[in-house]
Length: 597
Image 1 (cartoon, helix red, strand yellow):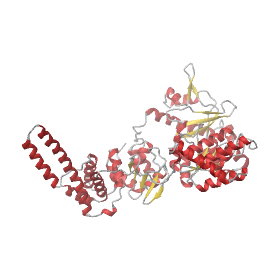
Image 2 (image 1 turned 180 degrees about the horizontal axis):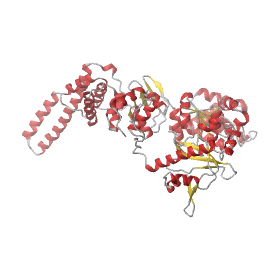
Image 3 (image 1 turned 45 degrees about the vertical axis):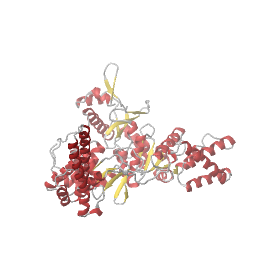
Image 4 (image 1 turned 90 degrees about the vertical axis):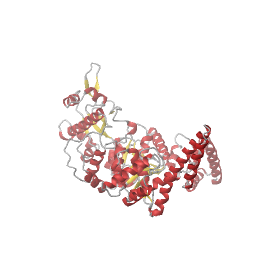
């Protein structure tokens, strides 16, 4: 790619707010001067990921990741520095005047991967064109309209239609220069026993599946002619992993951020129907149970989740498991109950969008209220055995509730429903609580939302070096003052000395003090992470020469201590060799060094 001028990079960096950019990927909450959230670079349930709007940098106290707005995009999306610059330039409407076609793909991305993405993008446009603009697609278009789909929905979700021909797509891809065996690996074609390649999707309404960047990675095709299966999905490929994809996440991200809530559906058709009803923060799993990865992705965006699955046994069980998983990841979960034999798509068709929003989504119950219904299934509560089992199951669940008010509320509900003594229920609930706590102490530790910042107890000289660098990042004058105070001595930590050398070079080239800009100046990822961490140190109250002198003293003192240790080893060696004159001479040198401490 043609080199982007440094001035243009700085213009782009200054035009965006790192908090706004990162908020598209992580739910951030203000705490003091900084914002905190769950780190997107490692799994965690307690926020340790910090973003500084003042310094325009981020740092994770858990895994050590850190940098500025460019490095965040590079690390999160796996793109190059130039691609991150271009992405932010487009977001800020800043022209780069780079010729079309000079962009190079990230070195991390394989050629096969990119060709699969390109082929899916081509077919998404082709299928959509067939549905909207051709006679052949009219039957499919009319079917969708009868099902309540609007042209706006069809456009937004890029719904299309595939021809009934056996090999039209195979021939199209071949003409465009794609390898047919690779397209078979991509899930777009099927190879017959005779070696011939045919289209996987024929005479089907085509629903494209997008990744979180909005790229087409798979399709789901609904049969129009009664063929089985009713829905035919792309197989797993190197670009499509069902356990990692949430349908509509790329569209819903901004609404999730706006409403601080996500609605989780069981299938993509439900998401589209809900979108027509004004529920724009809906996502869905892709024919699989909710996974750890799904839960992590959702938790980074919000801690408020409404689950809206079908009300049959399979849907109810799936909702329960999904809610438990999300709760383990720190989410507040509600369950939107659908009437029996209706999925969200059917409900919107039958009762309309407004009723779906007001009665189903807004009327969602707490997870605990859902458990009252869940454990009731299949039991005859007139039967004493079933009734006792039901009460005990609920007492176990009530014992897991963190707040006393919640526990009291649900215990009173049980007592009232079955005409039981509240004190007896409380007594049994406490017995269950302590029995479970003894069995698994870790599971019963109270959850906290406080920021988990690991307090590293560092040696005095290392703390001194870090705080000196923090001061130097804020002031060119201080940087040169520290250089004079060191008088040719070096930092004890190699990385700190390298950062110090780079920082002096940065100032010598005429740059102003700016932590975020200095991170662009550094090309080593390890050094950038260290600088991001050090830049987060608050040194506002230490702005005087005496503090700097004290820190420099600790740096030089460590070097003298190391020399003393080296001389003590040499003194012992001289004594071992019975060279008493040399041993006495070294001892005098050690005494002089100790005096200078």
